[in-house]
Amino acid sequence: MAPADRRAAIVDATVAVAVRKGLASTTVRDVAAEMGTSSGLIHHYFASMDEVLAAAFERVAAQDLEASSALMARAATPVEALRSFFATYTPADKDWAFQLWLDAWAEAARRPTVRATSRRLNLAWQGLLAATIRSGVAEGSFRCMDPDGAAWRILSLLDGLALQVVAHGTTIARRDVVAWATGAAESELGLEVGTLTSDALRDS
Amino acid sequence: MAPADRRAAIVDATVAVAVRKGLASTTVRDVAAEMGTSSGLIHHYFASMDEVLAAAFERVAAQDLEASSALMARAATPVEALRSFFATYTPADKDWAFQLWLDAWAEAARRPTVRATSRRLNLAWQGLLAATIRSGVAEGSFRCMDPDGAAWRILSLLDGLALQVVAHGTTIARRDVVAWATGAAESELGLEVGTLTSDALRDS
DNA sequence: TCCGCCGTTGGACGTTTGCGCAATATCGTC
DNA sequence: GACGATATTGCGCAAACGTCCAACGGCGGA
Image (tube, rainbow over all chains, first blue to last red; front, top):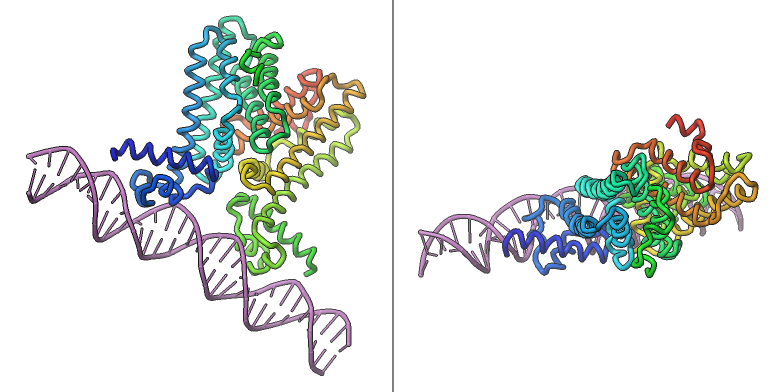
Protein backbone atom coordinates (compact mmCIF):
# COMPACT_ATOMS: atom_id res chain seq x y z
CA MET A 1 0.00 0.00 0.00
CA ALA A 2 1.23 3.48 -0.88
CA PRO A 3 2.60 5.46 2.07
CA ALA A 4 -0.02 8.22 1.76
CA ASP A 5 -2.85 5.70 1.60
CA ARG A 6 -1.48 3.77 4.52
CA ARG A 7 -1.25 6.89 6.63
CA ALA A 8 -4.83 7.71 5.78
CA ALA A 9 -5.90 4.17 6.59
CA ILE A 10 -4.24 4.38 10.00
CA VAL A 11 -5.97 7.66 10.73
CA ASP A 12 -9.31 6.25 9.59
CA ALA A 13 -8.95 3.22 11.80
CA THR A 14 -7.96 5.42 14.72
CA VAL A 15 -11.07 7.53 14.26
CA ALA A 16 -13.23 4.43 14.21
CA VAL A 17 -11.72 3.15 17.44
CA ALA A 18 -11.72 6.55 19.15
CA VAL A 19 -15.40 7.04 18.44
CA ARG A 20 -16.08 3.68 20.05
CA LYS A 21 -13.68 3.76 23.00
CA GLY A 22 -12.69 7.36 23.44
CA LEU A 23 -9.52 9.11 22.42
CA ALA A 24 -7.86 8.56 25.77
CA SER A 25 -8.14 4.78 25.76
CA THR A 26 -7.33 4.16 22.14
CA THR A 27 -4.17 2.05 21.97
CA VAL A 28 -1.73 1.12 19.25
CA ARG A 29 -2.98 -2.44 19.29
CA ASP A 30 -6.58 -1.32 18.95
CA VAL A 31 -5.76 0.60 15.82
CA ALA A 32 -3.72 -2.27 14.38
CA ALA A 33 -6.54 -4.71 15.08
CA GLU A 34 -9.03 -2.35 13.46
CA MET A 35 -6.90 -2.34 10.30
CA GLY A 36 -6.08 -6.03 10.52
CA THR A 37 -2.37 -5.34 10.50
CA SER A 38 0.48 -5.45 12.96
CA SER A 39 1.09 -2.85 15.63
CA GLY A 40 4.62 -2.18 14.48
CA LEU A 41 3.23 -0.71 11.28
CA ILE A 42 1.74 2.24 13.10
CA HIS A 43 5.12 3.24 14.47
CA HIS A 44 6.55 3.02 10.99
CA TYR A 45 4.34 5.92 9.95
CA PHE A 46 4.00 7.86 13.18
CA ALA A 47 6.70 8.69 15.68
CA SER A 48 4.41 8.32 18.68
CA MET A 49 0.87 7.41 19.61
CA ASP A 50 0.30 11.03 20.55
CA GLU A 51 0.70 12.00 16.90
CA VAL A 52 -1.70 9.30 15.75
CA LEU A 53 -4.41 10.49 18.11
CA ALA A 54 -3.87 14.10 17.14
CA ALA A 55 -4.08 13.20 13.46
CA ALA A 56 -7.31 11.29 14.04
CA PHE A 57 -8.86 14.19 15.92
CA GLU A 58 -7.63 16.62 13.32
CA ARG A 59 -9.18 14.60 10.53
CA VAL A 60 -12.65 14.78 12.04
CA ALA A 61 -12.46 18.35 13.26
CA ALA A 62 -10.76 19.83 10.23
CA GLN A 63 -13.28 18.16 7.96
CA ASP A 64 -16.15 19.75 9.84
CA LEU A 65 -14.44 23.10 9.82
CA GLU A 66 -13.83 22.94 6.11
CA ALA A 67 -17.42 21.94 5.42
CA SER A 68 -18.76 24.83 7.46
CA SER A 69 -16.22 27.19 5.99
CA ALA A 70 -17.15 26.25 2.44
CA LEU A 71 -20.86 26.56 3.12
CA MET A 72 -20.41 29.95 4.74
CA ALA A 73 -18.25 31.20 1.90
CA ARG A 74 -21.06 30.32 -0.48
CA ALA A 75 -23.57 32.39 1.48
CA ALA A 76 -24.79 35.60 -0.15
CA THR A 77 -24.75 37.73 3.00
CA PRO A 78 -23.06 37.62 6.41
CA VAL A 79 -26.47 36.92 7.95
CA GLU A 80 -26.87 33.92 5.67
CA ALA A 81 -23.34 32.84 6.52
CA LEU A 82 -24.16 32.90 10.22
CA ARG A 83 -27.29 30.88 9.61
CA SER A 84 -25.17 28.28 7.87
CA PHE A 85 -22.72 28.35 10.73
CA PHE A 86 -25.35 27.52 13.32
CA ALA A 87 -26.96 24.96 11.08
CA THR A 88 -23.73 23.00 10.70
CA TYR A 89 -22.33 23.51 14.18
CA THR A 90 -25.35 22.21 16.00
CA PRO A 91 -24.66 18.75 17.34
CA ALA A 92 -27.60 17.03 15.73
CA ASP A 93 -26.64 13.61 14.46
CA LYS A 94 -22.92 13.95 14.93
CA ASP A 95 -22.61 13.84 18.66
CA TRP A 96 -19.64 11.55 18.19
CA ALA A 97 -17.67 14.34 16.55
CA PHE A 98 -18.33 16.62 19.48
CA GLN A 99 -17.45 13.80 21.82
CA LEU A 100 -14.04 13.79 20.17
CA TRP A 101 -13.76 17.48 21.01
CA LEU A 102 -14.50 16.66 24.65
CA ASP A 103 -11.85 13.95 24.56
CA ALA A 104 -9.35 16.29 22.94
CA TRP A 105 -9.93 19.08 25.44
CA ALA A 106 -9.45 16.70 28.35
CA GLU A 107 -6.46 15.00 26.77
CA ALA A 108 -4.82 18.29 25.82
CA ALA A 109 -3.23 18.55 29.24
CA ARG A 110 -1.41 15.25 28.83
CA ARG A 111 -0.62 15.03 25.12
CA PRO A 112 1.30 17.94 23.63
CA THR A 113 0.45 17.17 20.01
CA VAL A 114 -3.25 16.81 20.79
CA ARG A 115 -3.15 20.12 22.63
CA ALA A 116 -1.51 21.88 19.70
CA THR A 117 -4.04 20.46 17.25
CA SER A 118 -7.05 21.19 19.40
CA ARG A 119 -5.84 24.70 20.04
CA ARG A 120 -5.20 25.40 16.39
CA LEU A 121 -8.61 24.17 15.31
CA ASN A 122 -10.40 26.09 18.04
CA LEU A 123 -8.61 29.20 16.92
CA ALA A 124 -9.59 28.47 13.33
CA TRP A 125 -13.27 28.22 14.28
CA GLN A 126 -13.04 31.47 16.14
CA GLY A 127 -11.25 33.08 13.23
CA LEU A 128 -13.91 31.93 10.82
CA LEU A 129 -16.66 33.36 12.98
CA ALA A 130 -14.76 36.59 13.64
CA ALA A 131 -14.14 37.12 9.94
CA THR A 132 -17.83 36.69 9.21
CA ILE A 133 -18.71 39.17 11.93
CA ARG A 134 -16.18 41.66 10.60
CA SER A 135 -17.55 41.43 7.10
CA GLY A 136 -21.05 41.94 8.46
CA VAL A 137 -19.92 45.00 10.36
CA ALA A 138 -18.21 46.41 7.27
CA GLU A 139 -21.33 45.75 5.24
CA GLY A 140 -23.49 47.44 7.85
CA SER A 141 -25.73 44.52 8.78
CA PHE A 142 -24.01 43.89 12.14
CA ARG A 143 -23.19 46.24 14.95
CA CYS A 144 -20.25 44.97 16.98
CA MET A 145 -17.32 46.70 18.61
CA ASP A 146 -15.29 43.60 19.38
CA PRO A 147 -15.61 40.95 16.65
CA ASP A 148 -12.89 38.77 18.13
CA GLY A 149 -14.40 38.77 21.58
CA ALA A 150 -17.89 38.25 20.20
CA ALA A 151 -16.69 35.27 18.22
CA TRP A 152 -15.17 33.72 21.33
CA ARG A 153 -18.31 34.34 23.34
CA ILE A 154 -20.65 32.86 20.75
CA LEU A 155 -18.40 29.88 20.17
CA SER A 156 -17.85 29.23 23.85
CA LEU A 157 -21.53 29.48 24.67
CA LEU A 158 -22.23 26.99 21.92
CA ASP A 159 -19.51 24.68 23.19
CA GLY A 160 -20.66 24.93 26.77
CA LEU A 161 -24.25 24.19 25.88
CA ALA A 162 -23.45 21.38 23.45
CA LEU A 163 -21.22 19.90 26.10
CA GLN A 164 -24.20 19.40 28.40
CA VAL A 165 -26.17 17.66 25.69
CA VAL A 166 -23.38 15.33 24.62
CA ALA A 167 -21.96 14.53 28.03
CA HIS A 168 -25.12 14.36 30.11
CA GLY A 169 -27.84 13.60 27.62
CA THR A 170 -30.83 15.59 28.66
CA THR A 171 -29.83 18.33 31.05
CA ILE A 172 -30.64 20.78 28.25
CA ALA A 173 -33.13 20.27 25.45
CA ARG A 174 -31.39 19.88 22.15
CA ARG A 175 -33.32 22.65 20.41
CA ASP A 176 -32.47 25.10 23.15
CA VAL A 177 -28.75 24.82 22.43
CA VAL A 178 -28.89 26.35 18.99
CA ALA A 179 -31.83 28.63 19.83
CA TRP A 180 -29.98 30.17 22.77
CA ALA A 181 -26.74 30.47 20.84
CA THR A 182 -28.42 32.23 17.93
CA GLY A 183 -30.19 34.48 20.41
CA ALA A 184 -26.89 35.41 21.98
CA ALA A 185 -25.41 36.07 18.56
CA GLU A 186 -28.32 38.33 17.64
CA SER A 187 -27.80 40.25 20.84
CA GLU A 188 -24.03 40.49 20.28
CA LEU A 189 -24.42 41.74 16.73
CA GLY A 190 -27.34 44.10 17.20
CA LEU A 191 -29.75 42.03 15.15
CA GLU A 192 -33.52 41.70 15.47
CA VAL A 193 -34.63 38.65 17.40
CA GLY A 194 -35.29 35.82 14.97
CA THR A 195 -33.01 37.13 12.24
CA LEU A 196 -30.64 34.21 12.52
CA THR A 197 -33.29 31.54 12.94
CA SER A 198 -33.29 29.74 9.62
CA ASP A 199 -35.96 27.30 8.55
CA ALA A 200 -33.59 24.40 8.83
CA LEU A 201 -32.97 25.19 12.48
CA ARG A 202 -36.64 25.61 13.26
CA ASP A 203 -37.23 21.97 12.45
CA SER A 204 -34.50 20.43 14.55
CA MET B 1 -6.79 4.87 62.17
CA ALA B 2 -10.57 4.73 62.23
CA PRO B 3 -12.19 3.39 59.05
CA ALA B 4 -14.10 6.61 58.34
CA ASP B 5 -10.99 8.73 58.82
CA ARG B 6 -8.94 6.43 56.66
CA ARG B 7 -11.47 6.58 53.85
CA ALA B 8 -11.41 10.36 54.02
CA ALA B 9 -7.63 10.36 54.07
CA ILE B 10 -7.55 8.21 50.94
CA VAL B 11 -9.92 10.54 49.13
CA ASP B 12 -7.89 13.55 50.27
CA ALA B 13 -4.68 12.03 49.02
CA THR B 14 -6.35 11.11 45.73
CA VAL B 15 -7.47 14.69 45.25
CA ALA B 16 -3.98 15.94 45.97
CA VAL B 17 -2.50 13.63 43.36
CA ALA B 18 -5.25 14.31 40.81
CA VAL B 19 -4.56 18.01 41.13
CA ARG B 20 -0.99 17.34 40.15
CA LYS B 21 -1.35 14.62 37.53
CA GLY B 22 -4.97 14.66 36.42
CA LEU B 23 -7.72 12.28 37.40
CA ALA B 24 -7.18 9.87 34.55
CA SER B 25 -3.54 9.20 35.33
CA THR B 26 -3.84 8.93 39.07
CA THR B 27 -2.77 5.46 40.15
CA VAL B 28 -3.16 3.37 43.28
CA ARG B 29 0.54 3.66 43.97
CA ASP B 30 0.44 7.43 43.64
CA VAL B 31 -2.27 7.67 46.26
CA ALA B 32 -0.46 5.27 48.58
CA ALA B 33 2.78 7.23 48.22
CA GLU B 34 0.91 10.47 48.91
CA MET B 35 -0.39 9.02 52.16
CA GLY B 36 2.89 7.32 52.99
CA THR B 37 1.22 3.94 53.26
CA SER B 38 1.05 0.76 51.23
CA SER B 39 -0.97 0.35 48.08
CA GLY B 40 -2.86 -2.64 49.40
CA LEU B 41 -4.52 -0.39 51.93
CA ILE B 42 -6.50 1.42 49.29
CA HIS B 43 -8.15 -1.80 48.17
CA HIS B 44 -9.05 -2.58 51.71
CA TYR B 45 -11.37 0.43 51.72
CA PHE B 46 -12.42 0.63 48.09
CA ALA B 47 -13.46 -2.23 45.87
CA SER B 48 -11.82 -0.73 42.82
CA MET B 49 -9.78 2.23 41.73
CA ASP B 50 -12.76 3.56 39.81
CA GLU B 51 -14.59 4.09 43.07
CA VAL B 52 -11.67 6.02 44.49
CA LEU B 53 -11.50 8.32 41.49
CA ALA B 54 -15.25 8.88 41.48
CA ALA B 55 -15.17 9.74 45.17
CA ALA B 56 -12.29 12.15 44.62
CA PHE B 57 -14.04 13.93 41.77
CA GLU B 58 -17.24 14.18 43.73
CA ARG B 59 -15.38 15.54 46.72
CA VAL B 60 -13.70 18.33 44.77
CA ALA B 61 -16.78 19.30 42.81
CA ALA B 62 -19.19 19.09 45.70
CA GLN B 63 -16.79 21.02 47.92
CA ASP B 64 -16.51 23.85 45.40
CA LEU B 65 -20.25 23.92 44.98
CA GLU B 66 -20.82 24.02 48.69
CA ALA B 67 -18.25 26.75 49.20
CA SER B 68 -19.84 28.91 46.52
CA SER B 69 -23.29 28.13 47.80
CA ALA B 70 -22.39 29.10 51.33
CA LEU B 71 -20.73 32.30 50.21
CA MET B 72 -23.69 33.26 48.06
CA ALA B 73 -26.15 32.52 50.86
CA ARG B 74 -24.25 34.91 53.07
CA ALA B 75 -24.55 37.73 50.52
CA ALA B 76 -26.89 40.56 51.42
CA THR B 77 -28.41 40.99 47.97
CA PRO B 78 -28.79 38.90 44.82
CA VAL B 79 -26.33 41.22 43.10
CA GLU B 80 -23.79 40.54 45.82
CA ALA B 81 -24.53 36.83 45.53
CA LEU B 82 -23.78 36.91 41.82
CA ARG B 83 -20.54 38.75 42.45
CA SER B 84 -19.54 35.98 44.84
CA PHE B 85 -20.51 33.42 42.27
CA PHE B 86 -18.21 34.82 39.62
CA ALA B 87 -15.46 35.38 42.13
CA THR B 88 -15.41 31.72 43.15
CA TYR B 89 -16.18 30.15 39.78
CA THR B 90 -13.42 31.89 37.92
CA PRO B 91 -10.60 29.47 37.22
CA ALA B 92 -7.86 31.59 38.65
CA ASP B 93 -5.55 29.44 40.70
CA LYS B 94 -7.59 26.27 40.52
CA ASP B 95 -7.22 25.22 36.94
CA TRP B 96 -6.71 21.74 38.25
CA ALA B 97 -10.29 21.58 39.51
CA PHE B 98 -11.56 22.60 36.11
CA GLN B 99 -9.32 20.03 34.49
CA LEU B 100 -11.16 17.48 36.58
CA TRP B 101 -14.38 18.73 35.04
CA LEU B 102 -12.92 18.33 31.56
CA ASP B 103 -11.95 14.78 32.41
CA ALA B 104 -15.40 14.09 33.80
CA TRP B 105 -17.25 15.50 30.80
CA ALA B 106 -15.16 13.48 28.39
CA GLU B 107 -15.51 10.33 30.44
CA ALA B 108 -19.23 10.80 31.09
CA ALA B 109 -20.29 9.21 27.84
CA ARG B 110 -18.59 5.95 28.64
CA ARG B 111 -18.74 5.65 32.42
CA PRO B 112 -22.25 5.72 33.87
CA THR B 113 -21.06 6.49 37.38
CA VAL B 114 -19.05 9.48 36.23
CA ARG B 115 -21.92 10.68 34.08
CA ALA B 116 -24.37 10.53 36.98
CA THR B 117 -22.06 12.46 39.27
CA SER B 118 -21.07 15.05 36.71
CA ARG B 119 -24.65 15.54 35.62
CA ARG B 120 -25.94 15.91 39.15
CA LEU B 121 -23.31 18.50 40.05
CA ASN B 122 -23.80 20.46 36.85
CA LEU B 123 -27.51 20.57 37.54
CA ALA B 124 -26.81 21.71 41.08
CA TRP B 125 -24.67 24.60 39.83
CA GLN B 126 -27.39 25.60 37.41
CA GLY B 127 -29.99 25.33 40.17
CA LEU B 128 -27.95 27.51 42.47
CA LEU B 129 -27.59 30.17 39.82
CA ALA B 130 -31.24 29.95 38.77
CA ALA B 131 -32.41 30.33 42.37
CA THR B 132 -30.29 33.44 42.79
CA ILE B 133 -31.70 34.90 39.60
CA ARG B 134 -35.24 34.13 40.70
CA SER B 135 -34.73 35.82 44.03
CA GLY B 136 -33.29 38.84 42.24
CA VAL B 137 -36.28 38.99 39.95
CA ALA B 138 -38.69 38.72 42.90
CA GLU B 139 -36.78 41.44 44.69
CA GLY B 140 -36.89 43.66 41.60
CA SER B 141 -33.16 44.06 41.01
CA PHE B 142 -33.10 41.66 38.01
CA ARG B 143 -35.25 41.59 34.92
CA CYS B 144 -35.39 38.10 33.47
CA MET B 145 -38.16 36.10 31.86
CA ASP B 146 -36.42 32.74 31.87
CA PRO B 147 -34.27 32.24 34.97
CA ASP B 148 -33.56 28.58 34.19
CA GLY B 149 -32.45 29.29 30.66
CA ALA B 150 -30.43 32.30 31.74
CA ALA B 151 -28.65 30.19 34.34
CA TRP B 152 -27.73 27.60 31.72
CA ARG B 153 -26.51 30.26 29.32
CA ILE B 154 -24.35 32.03 31.88
CA LEU B 155 -22.95 28.78 33.20
CA SER B 156 -22.26 27.34 29.76
CA LEU B 157 -20.57 30.49 28.55
CA LEU B 158 -18.36 30.41 31.61
CA ASP B 159 -17.58 26.74 31.05
CA GLY B 160 -16.86 27.22 27.38
CA LEU B 161 -14.52 30.13 28.01
CA ALA B 162 -12.75 28.54 30.96
CA LEU B 163 -12.28 25.44 28.86
CA GLN B 164 -10.15 27.37 26.40
CA VAL B 165 -7.95 28.72 29.15
CA VAL B 166 -7.43 25.41 30.89
CA ALA B 167 -7.06 23.18 27.85
CA HIS B 168 -5.11 25.45 25.56
CA GLY B 169 -3.37 27.86 27.84
CA THR B 170 -3.53 31.22 26.18
CA THR B 171 -6.14 31.23 23.45
CA ILE B 172 -8.15 33.60 25.63
CA ALA B 173 -6.79 36.02 28.18
CA ARG B 174 -7.65 34.92 31.67
CA ARG B 175 -9.25 38.18 32.72
CA ASP B 176 -11.54 38.14 29.66
CA VAL B 177 -13.20 34.92 30.81
CA VAL B 178 -14.81 36.36 33.88
CA ALA B 179 -15.25 39.83 32.38
CA TRP B 180 -17.17 38.45 29.42
CA ALA B 181 -19.23 36.14 31.58
CA THR B 182 -20.25 38.92 33.95
CA GLY B 183 -21.07 41.09 30.96
CA ALA B 184 -23.33 38.39 29.58
CA ALA B 185 -24.98 38.03 32.96
CA GLU B 186 -25.59 41.77 33.19
CA SER B 187 -27.18 41.68 29.76
CA GLU B 188 -29.30 38.66 30.63
CA LEU B 189 -30.58 40.21 33.85
CA GLY B 190 -31.10 43.74 32.67
CA LEU B 191 -28.33 45.20 34.81
CA GLU B 192 -26.16 48.24 34.18
CA VAL B 193 -22.78 47.40 32.72
CA GLY B 194 -20.27 47.06 35.54
CA THR B 195 -22.80 46.20 38.21
CA LEU B 196 -21.43 42.71 38.69
CA THR B 197 -17.78 43.66 38.49
CA SER B 198 -16.60 43.37 42.06
CA ASP B 199 -13.30 44.70 43.31
CA ALA B 200 -11.96 41.20 43.78
CA LEU B 201 -12.53 40.41 40.11
CA ARG B 202 -11.02 43.66 38.94
CA ASP B 203 -7.68 42.59 40.34
CA SER B 204 -7.46 39.17 38.75
C1' DT C 1 -1.76 -12.56 80.42
C1' DC C 2 -3.32 -14.40 76.52
C1' DC C 3 -6.20 -14.34 72.39
C1' DG C 4 -8.31 -12.76 68.40
C1' DC C 5 -9.79 -9.14 65.59
C1' DC C 6 -8.54 -5.94 62.17
C1' DG C 7 -5.85 -2.21 60.16
C1' DT C 8 -1.81 -2.58 57.56
C1' DT C 9 2.11 -4.28 55.01
C1' DG C 10 4.84 -5.40 50.92
C1' DG C 11 5.35 -8.00 47.32
C1' DA C 12 3.65 -11.38 43.62
C1' DC C 13 0.80 -12.01 39.59
C1' DG C 14 -1.10 -11.27 35.20
C1' DT C 15 -2.26 -7.78 31.95
C1' DT C 16 -1.56 -3.91 29.17
C1' DT C 17 0.90 -0.07 27.67
C1' DG C 18 4.17 2.44 24.03
C1' DC C 19 8.01 1.46 21.51
C1' DG C 20 12.02 -0.80 18.96
C1' DC C 21 14.20 -4.16 16.13
C1' DA C 22 15.56 -8.02 13.34
C1' DA C 23 13.41 -10.84 10.01
C1' DT C 24 10.24 -11.42 6.17
C1' DA C 25 7.22 -10.44 2.28
C1' DT C 26 6.33 -7.76 -1.72
C1' DC C 27 6.84 -4.98 -5.62
C1' DG C 28 8.93 -1.98 -9.13
C1' DT C 29 13.17 -1.77 -11.91
C1' DC C 30 17.12 -2.97 -14.74
C1' DG D 1 14.60 -13.42 -13.73
C1' DA D 2 17.48 -11.36 -10.14
C1' DC D 3 18.01 -7.49 -7.11
C1' DG D 4 17.32 -3.73 -3.94
C1' DA D 5 14.30 -0.78 -1.65
C1' DT D 6 10.65 -0.68 1.42
C1' DA D 7 6.29 -1.93 3.32
C1' DT D 8 5.13 -5.13 6.80
C1' DT D 9 5.52 -8.54 10.30
C1' DG D 10 5.74 -10.54 14.88
C1' DC D 11 7.71 -10.59 18.81
C1' DG D 12 10.49 -8.84 22.68
C1' DC D 13 11.31 -5.39 26.15
C1' DA D 14 10.77 -2.55 30.15
C1' DA D 15 7.65 -0.06 32.66
C1' DA D 16 3.34 0.65 34.83
C1' DC D 17 -1.07 -0.75 35.82
C1' DG D 18 -5.08 -2.88 39.07
C1' DT D 19 -5.79 -6.53 41.94
C1' DC D 20 -5.03 -10.01 45.29
C1' DC D 21 -3.16 -12.33 49.37
C1' DA D 22 -0.48 -14.30 53.05
C1' DA D 23 1.72 -12.48 56.86
C1' DC D 24 2.60 -8.97 60.47
C1' DG D 25 1.53 -6.02 64.58
C1' DG D 26 -0.82 -3.45 67.91
C1' DC D 27 -4.84 -2.85 70.66
C1' DG D 28 -9.07 -4.14 73.29
C1' DG D 29 -11.82 -7.75 75.55
C1' DA D 30 -11.90 -12.24 78.09
